[in-house]
Length: 125
Image (tube, rainbow, N blue to C red):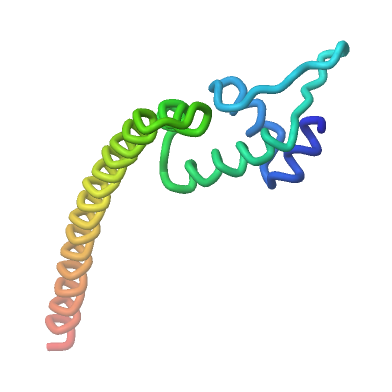
């Protein structure tokens, strides 16, 4: 199938598919005229790549995890699991930072509300 067909089938943009190729996540064969051609295997791979992006993984991390898919082995599986654990820890730390940021904003909002209430009370006296 050609790039437009793959994009439609996988629910991604043609631009995304080109990016995946640039990053080494996806490969295609080329026709004599230079058009990209893909198989059903690549369509499945795009779906897998999309799932990994949805899980918050970068293209670099996905590249590190692909040997588990391309050459399944206990060693590759263990390495992939360890790498995903590192990413999970990174996300957990980021969530904790976001919660702290949200709490700081909540504090500013509470201070603003208190100040407004105080100003209104002083104005009505």
